[in-house]
Amino acid sequence: MLKFEGAFEVTKHEPPKGRNIYFHVKIQSNHPRLLELAASGKKPPTHFHPRQWEYFKVETGSLTVEIDGVAHVFTSADGEYALKPGPHHCLYATPGQESDLVEFWLSATPSGVAGELDQAFFENWYGYQEDIMLRGVTPDPIQVLAMFDAGDSYLSPPAWIPFRHTVGKVLGVVVGRYIGGLLGYAPFYPEWTTDWAAACRKMESCWTQRKFADLDLQTQRKAEFLRSGASVGNGALYKEEAGCLRQEEARASKSKKHD
Image 1 (cartoon, one colour):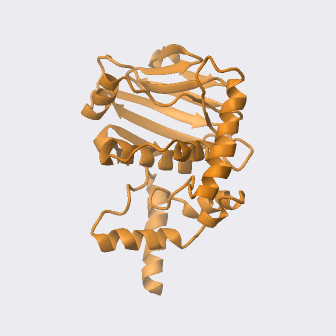
Image 2: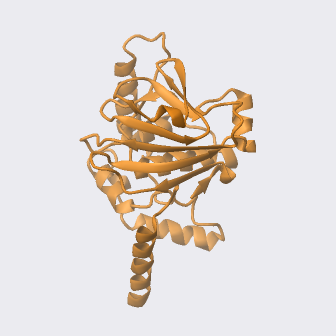
Image 3: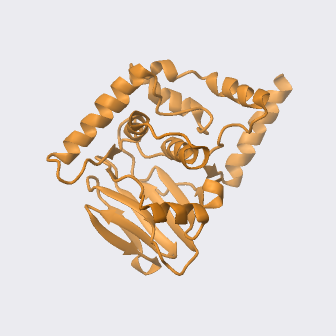
């Protein structure tokens, strides 16, 4: 599904053996929304993954990945790049490139814990970013920390702060997961999450987030949006493969028959 008024599109594919996600990403590098961001000097937040390997393989255009403060530009000639767990990094379409389209494959290994880079994380993170960019929502640091912690990812403190990994993880776990959970910050929201049941199982694993794990909430939220005349949330981030879509349609049809 498209995000940011068509600037960003992700298609979900079956991951290869040993990986838990496999996405084909398209970025319209000269889209007005992205040019606006570039002009403001804003970049995606620098972060790190303590357990997961992350892989990038560019097909079209060029992708910049900042790793521990050094910008690396990748093109199709570079093949797949494997980013080991730990480095502070962020990625974005290389500014000023001739190509209007950047295409790349993104994948990762499983984390081995409840939280990890997965479909639910990306759906909710980009759904929240879209609210900020397009709907004027003020960014909330606690909400960001809660979402990243649920993806076993942590925001990187400034480079001058010692023990950056420790500080980043403590902020994510203590502030994002525990304090945030007590204050009502959920890591996942039903209007953005395709597999809400899986998200609920994750939230049930943390005592401060169990109250958000309501399987009926997605149906309730959808009804609220429809009653208000609005579209159903921001929708999922992904275009599902044909087989997945057929399964969803079959479930919907079966549900209507029971009704």
